[in-house]
Every structure is written in structure tokens, then in C-alpha cells.
Image (cartoon, helix red, strand yellow):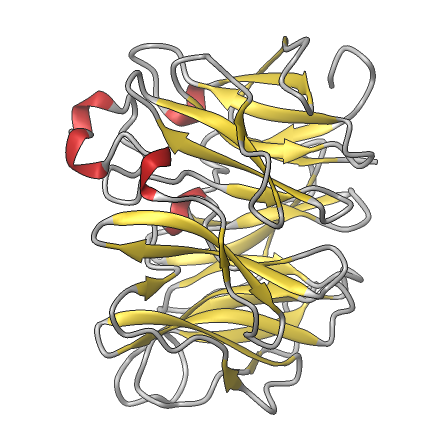
Length: 322
């Protein structure tokens, strides 16, 4: 609970973001994945009561994502009939029933599902010839199509532990994603049909992955990816994201057309920005020296980077309730 009464939820260990999860659209439940010993999907009330296991098998089920109406959950799993044992996109009812495989058995991993705001489509990443491309399909698994086709670099080849899966804009017209070029992840936006691709960050924005030894980033969240999460603003006009700096990592802001890029924090190691519903504020995690990301301090600041304050909560921001 922030000082102004706005609710935010973070994951205390072992309920963490390492394998996906999120707040339900009605703000009452959290879905997450936990290893027991294989990865399974659980739901818990936001007050910590009512823990329920939704999946139970010998395969890995993880990266759950609520549908916009909260009735279904999309997730990744290596269960199914694919003889290659690859990951696929599945969907189930919010109570764990009626599990269905959506992505086809084409012998390639399908990862990071994200629902369109109207719940009609799902965007996801697919391994293609040692790289990753972005695909979309109808929410029933039909009419799947490839949106990107760039073999010289990887779409969403990134550290999915820290929020870099492709994300629909709030109006459903665009998709943001990370693009890996020579070991550096760039923030990119394209139309929902794959057209008008725009790269919002460039190499000059980075210290450079070659300059970031694993030990320099406290908690070692993603030494190879160099971007630790991005989020659309509620109006779809801006994106908040995290980039490495000479001292660690900080949160930046950029317009969706790539203009007015600016640094918001100067905390040493700040990551995982989360917007307030009105777009006026941003919650984020500040990792103190010697601490892991899940031990971070949760701060809130104005969307222009001013008036940051400590909420006295610890963990990683998950979402901002109404």
C-alpha cells in the first residue's frame, strides 16, 4: 500500500516473477509459477490466502498470463504430443480446467504469450533457425502468422525473467518487444500486423554489454540482455524501460514514436517500472548494494521522474491496482 492509498502488489519469495505471473484484471488474485520440483502454475488471493495449484503434471508449466476478462490463463508448457519435446502455448480456464494447446506442433519452442486488449489474439515468440521471431494467432489457436522475419538478429531473444516478452499496446494497435543485435537488446515497436517497425533505442543509449561484467550488476539479473523490463503507459503514448548505466541500471522514458527519450531515475540500480492506472506515476524496484532484485525497495515517482518516495514495501513491483 503506497502512502497515497494506491495499491500495488509484489511477490515475496518464493512467489516471484522469475517464471511469469501477474495480477488478475479484477485485482483479486495473483497467478504465478513455482518449482515443485517441475514448474507448476498457482493462483493466490492478493491477501495471501486461498493458494490453489492449477497445473499438476511431470512437465514444466510456466509464464502464465491472464486474459483481459480474467476468465482464462495462457501459459507455456513442454507437455503435449510434440515428439520434439518443445515448449508450446496453452490456455486454460482460470480455475485450471479445460487445458488446450494453441500453438502448432512444428518442432520449435513457442514462448512468452501476451493477450491483445480485446482478448481476441495472442502474440508470442518462436524459435526460428537459432533466433527468435514474433508470431500472433487467434485466441483459439487458429490463423497463426509470423510478424517478424529478420534472421540477422533475434526478436525477443532476451531475459524473459525480467519482463521482456512482446507486449500489446493498450489500444491493441501496436506491439513492443526487445530485439537482440550483437548482444544488445533494443526497444522496438511495430504495428500489430508486423508493419511500420520502429526502433526506439540505439547503441548510444547503452554503456554496452561488453562493458557490463556480471558482477557489476548487483543480483546479476541479465548480464547478456541489457534491458530489464518495459511497460506501455496506460494511454499507449510512452514506454518506461530499464537500461544499463555506468553505475548499474536506471529507468528511462520514451515516446512511442521514439522521440523525447530521457532518464528518470538516478538510483544506481532501478528496474521493473509499473505505471499507475492514470499514467501519472511509476512504481519501480531499487536494489540496494549487495542485495538481490527480490530484496529491492519499492519506490513510486511521478511519471517525469520527480518526487520519488519509498513505499516501505520490499520485492519487485507486479502491477498497480485500481
